[in-house]
Amino acid sequence: MAQASKLSDGAGQGANLKRSRIAIYLQLAALFRSRITSGHWAVGSRIPNIDELAEEFGVARGTIRQAFDALEEEGLVERLRAKGSFVNWTSIIKAHEGSDITALESTPNAVLPDVLRDGGTAAPAYRRFRRLHRRDGEPHLLGTSYLDERLYEMLAPERFQREPLLRLLQETAAQSLGPAHQVLTITTADVETAAHLEIAVNAPIALMRRAVLSKDGELIYASEGRYRGDRVRLEIDLR
Image (spheres, rainbow, N blue to C red):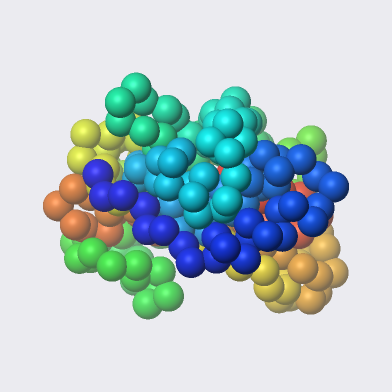
């Protein structure tokens, strides 16, 4: 697997770490979470090793280990003996477990928007899903997803009414999954989004775009999730 690219902000960040009253390892854990959620450290990629990160941030190797201990407990990374640490795909596919899902749309032969064409070649056909996720009765995510129609046809249609799509993607394409990428940005709710999420128009929301390619370079899954701003924590969820 390709090594995740090293960012150039380490020197400045290292100086800032020592100015805060928050423990340095907790600051680093938060920064590393941000690199994962932003896609700088892609799912499945090898994270720079402890020596590299200790040099980048000017801290002791033990401090880096403490930061990774925190991330490993959350399931965001997996450490393999003699191979290093990797961003954990399993934590991404579990992100929506426990949500109550309402299927709003399932449309065959949908056109994939240009904004979600994140590299790779297009699949022959996509099925478009729109789904509303609730937790404790409160809507928190309005998602629009595009799944390779061939994968959709491998499972019973009713499963796509109630189960998280990433889990179904893992089930149908586990052996052929290639690179995965996601980008998180902050924006505001339009009229339709506000109505579904039960928030005010122009209220802050988190916009998460994800793309998953096959090992052959086909874009088999792409999604755009709109999360209520008051229900988002960068420490979790993606993919």
